[in-house]
Image 1 (cartoon, rainbow, N blue to C red):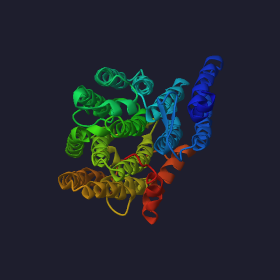
Image 2 (image 1 turned 45 degrees about the vertical axis):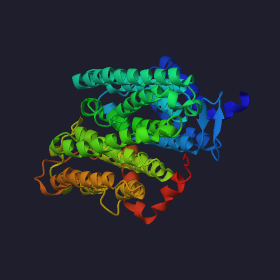
Image 3 (image 1 turned 90 degrees about the vertical axis):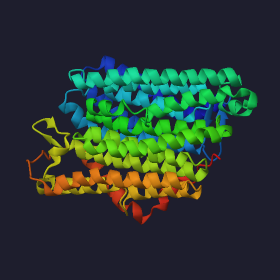
Image 4 (image 1 turned 60 degrees about the horizontal axis):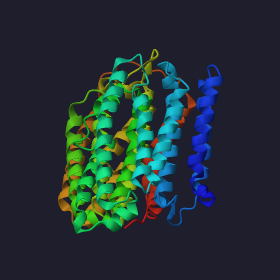
Length: 472
């Protein structure tokens, strides 16, 4: 047991750090800044701790209920780096709307601890513990701005609908345990045969629960309202972190316990992918609020990620992981831009508020131009390569209909991205925004925008890392 603890040092360190931060919050008056800065330090220390965990091969620990491999370590690194940028970009915003409290970074760290458990889980019970730890923190974060009726409403909506999806997922887990006599992923796969058809029913319920977590159609109904009502910093967190963890959970389930059921789950994943790509692209056209727009956009993007998973191949998994990696960079850049739309201590988030932005803020406008072109998948930006890898994996498996639908939805989505660019560059100027932003926000915007812009110089860099993910 002691030798196995070595593999979960990052999780143990994060857990102990959370308790330490809670104690500081209790005994230190006005300790918000200290807790926030310590949270950043904890995340920086977490990166080498994860990198130090062996991942050259697959390690099953704690009675084979916890899996350490290259995929889990790669995703954990993504989660920690993303969270670091989320905290860096949002501190000024939290102070402005007066919710810069000690609880905020503690809830964020609690949520990512749940995500780290999720991505390494090799057992239904361990997976569910990680999922609920993540979700409980998200319920509170969504309604963190208690003085805002929209924030309270979004927290309640997310809580009710997420509880429903968790119930469905838990029912699926109980069915699988009943028919396979095990909660271990490997045992479930071994025990499947013609006499255990009930596992298929359990699988459907689990996939429905996971589809809710990534807001795939038709389980997307919570996303637009929760994205709009939550504080913008929480919306940024919602837009990337839970999606990364849930997509990894999809990979874990599809390619370990349900690996023998590919003929059954492939149809479900293809349907979720097509519905999400089309609905997300069409529904975003009429949106006036930037956060609602990005909610529908994220639904569409999850459709592309699921398209890669539906292939049932290593190339498909690798294309989905590379897609979600580039997607998080694009979202960080987009939200960093939104945080800069501030005037007289008020933050603006309507598409019309971008009118004539290029006349007073040329650098911010250029950043938005690059990010929006990348989200639309226009070459040679990073977003183009993300879609290219997915479509290549899909076409390799002769799934031409899925590729055609994906290309059509890309064309539809380009309309609303280009419309925003037209508003920024060609509409009437409505005034100047503040320029006194903190250094963390500026670093985040510059770094992510440059990464999107120069990705084409060495696109195989990301492929080099994801190509080590071999599950099939």
